[in-house]
Amino acid sequence: MTDRITAQLTFLTEACKLKSVLRGTTLCDGSRRENSGEHSWHIALYAMVMAEHANRPINIDRVIRMLLIHDIVEIDAGDNPIHGNHDPAETEAIEQAAATRIFGLLPSDQASAFRALWDEFEAAETDDAIFAKSIDRVQPVVSNLESGGTSWIDYNVTREQVETRVGAKVQRGASAIWGALRTRIDIWFSSQA
Image (tube, rainbow, N blue to C red):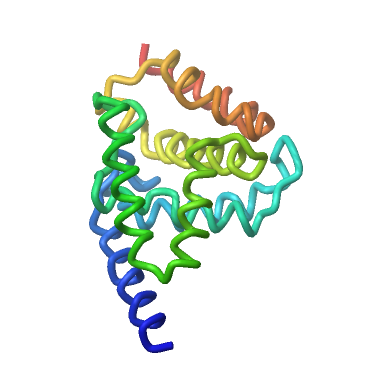
């Protein structure tokens, strides 16, 4: 039992490093960039609050678990903003290695379960993962709308990029949420013209 607890505590201590990974997105008030730990907590809360808007029935407990671990690989890989300039194949390889290393700190049964949940999120083929991916994309949009478009300005994001890189994923899992945000997004981009 002691070995199991030691492994679990080692994983939890490693997970604390996620709080030091700064993201491209700021807090809603624009005062500073959020960290990946804050992001993971915030989108888990988004999922709890917005679950009724999922396009298909979901298991909210599974979705929350996915969202709490989905970015843990950023401990090794760093944040790769959706509108940033990075090589997706290289990023995926780094994230796969990070998942193997970090989840491998856990006892084998938990390592397998957590890794399977992370892989499911990444594949975005199940209803739970599709909704989780949608919510992961919604939170940065709201942060940008509330902060005056801070990271959109930083990354020279166009309205078309928001639609193709974000909207398509949100629409797939939570079309009502995307419909509600679309007007605000249009107004923000119109004000920048």
